[in-house]
Image (cartoon, rainbow over all chains, first blue to last red; front, side, top):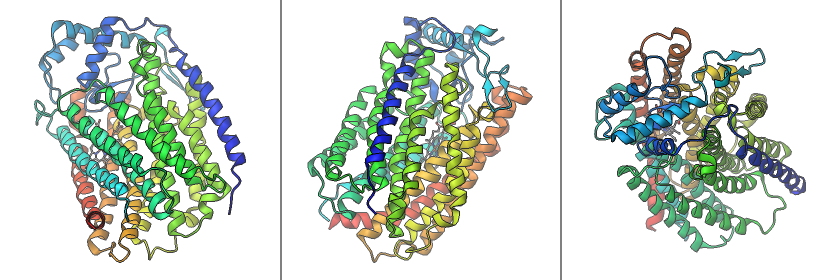
Length: 143
Length: 441
Ligand code: HEM
């Protein structure tokens, strides 16, 4: 059976046009809650988060590896915060190795986690589950 | 057979698969004994080794198979053998460089591409070379292109795009805006998976049409309908990974709507169950046929899981737990790996038609593989469910206490991981034999 490719090429062209437009919009859309851009110190912290592969055990917004806990709101959770974060970096725990960061590097990591924390909430305990299967998440500016 | 490069790709892929499983096993051992090796090879070092090796297995095995099918089964004159060799050499050298980059902690990249970002350049170049060779070889006449040619072409093109997209974070325009940046990161990795799925699912349709000796499965309108449905999901469905990220809600609405179209796929699988199960011609390709049967089963299991947690209300509870890992490994092993083993057996049999593939050992290995994978998969689901219960229901005790309570499931995960490793090694023996003999001649 020889299929005529014309209709398929046409569908492909439409999909590609939609995809182009969609990407353009996605790349130019900010998050739902307006927050400050990452500061240079936070960017340094993010680089450390990447080069030390913190993400391979920890999650942000539930994404990452699963050996350790989620860190999205570790900065603002009651009983946790900057000193708590630094204590873990200094001593390691269970499967988490001890890191030998300088004070400046630790500050950068804390600053990064602080700015991540400001973007939203995870786990989102006050989210509303709707009958349609949709979940209305609670945003930082609704607190 | 003069062109041996496809076989080099396949042997390279198998090496990545088995090495990757050793890394995975060592990593999972740290769930059982957290202090073990943590200062020398911590989990954070092993995970990238594992994940990058396994994704490489899929991508390299798909590439080698496609080159082989085009050149040695379809007998098309390849546009350039030189480009093909260059492609292989580039990937081989980059593979070695990636391992070095991991071993010596040059890991400035992000999840799935943790190596030094500069190494993305030769990888991209390799894909471009593959694309040139592929389209130049096949373009002569698009009329009558079966769906798998479309799928492979799509897979190559989107692979190039999404590998680039996965590195947009290098630009401040993305990086400084955390939520956008994070969304684009997970968009790119979701669609990267979609791109290799185009290659691998294309291979499964190719194999079906060859084993059944029936071209209709690859040329009828239904096949194209599902191809375009898959492509739509590749393009617009990724945001089900980020339902809980505070992006603009419309992004998530679109993903929810698009993801739900996959129910059509499930319905069609159930409706066509009897027809899709291949009945004929299994005598010629006994193992390739059996692996495709296994694929059918694993698609069924995985699509139900994926469909369920693409519903935000369910995703809310499963997200961020090992249920996601069950999905990733359930699909990469259960679906991608079974299709690729089917391809490897098909190719091995093509090279050595007289070699008996379904020996008693290989059959035992095949059964043990499926049973091990099933228990491995269920262990991950239970581990994930327990974590979810801790996160959303009991909310009691520390993270460490919760992890300790899951250890029995991590033990079974580890043991049946060994089962997967050993059984696949047994199953792969005749493939290695056939390939190595062919390379020597
Ligand atoms: C010997 C068998 C295997 C073992 C013991 C194993 C172990 C692991 C472990 C421990 C993780 C990290 C999970 C975490 O973050 O907690 C992982 C992730 C992963 N593995 Fe495996 N693995 C095995 C085989 C495979 C194979 C054969 C493939 C692919 C063909 C594969 C693909 C993946 C992928 C894609 C991930 C990332 C999951 C995600 O990001 O959600 N694994 N594996």
